Image: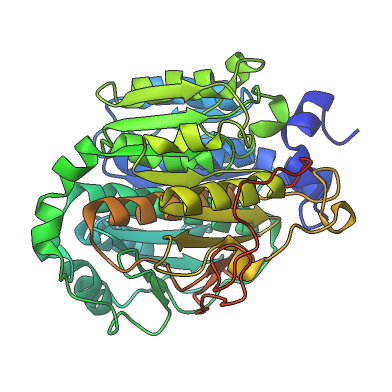
Length: 481
């Protein structure tokens, strides 16, 4: 047997994908990563996803390592096999943890994550090193924006830091801690996906860096010239107060709901409701970062509440240990400003879409499968709804079951953090929403596409002659989440 039974169950969603398989998961468990950052808060989302996907050895090289020991214990509760080392006091700035990892049979990746100045300094040290035969990921972060550059072994890791300077400076006038936190979260999930690809030698690594702007949901490899200079500075100044007063309901606390709740709690959304009728299972832990081994069997809403209250005690967490049904949907969403769908089945997606339409509530929706994700923002009467794209519930034979498909644990992280960003934009009245667009993410190519689509006048729910005038309920069929 390639892996023990407990690891097979833990990483089942990975193993059933041929691109990973049992052999690939074994490679991940034997691989090591060094993460260079300023402090825990910048790299925390990244560390959670590296641990969840099964990276076996993680070295943290930090300027300020306060809180690392406690975080390492939390990471080991997600995956008891992970080894987390504090290399901050060692002379490892350029070459990494060679003495600790020299016996590893896996692959090595060095991640440098931080603001422009931190990246510039550490990349200079990396380029001067003569023994760093590892792949290097440079992740430069600014408020709402970022740059991701991946250099596999033997490739150049040069970055045009003039462009990097322009990218990060573009948002300095609207410097907001919320934008920085959301950017670190989004980047952390992206980087963890790239680490898996490097270790398993799958997918593509584009030659050009990826630029992103979360306020406009713009993605480019041709520079950041089209990215908007901050136009929302007055709104952003009031953002913290608006977030503190806001009430957000997250329906489903699994692969998508976990990163949404993590991000919104981190930035101080005042009241967060969590609804989920499932309990934590071992097979959840390759992607659901709010849960852990010690809380297997606990209701997910309770497990999530414990995690989130420790993350930010000032946030009010309200839990509903229940599944979404035709009978409770309207009552559950009535008291909340924004609804976020973290659902793992199509019937509930249709039910929640319809309920939010009837209640006039904005809905942030996403779905994930294998290495791909799709997301959208639905605002009643301002754009298309879910049924404009998918008018009718597919037959059961056309829906992949949980036993037929897998999912890379990082993908729901990317999409869930996107949902958190859209939620913040709605609450704050800032940025450009994905109302008439779809966000399509392909992890194997690290490609984002944002095609436009229109409201369907023939939509059975929001069209000119609607045929759906009340909530319907379908038989629940397992999907992915």
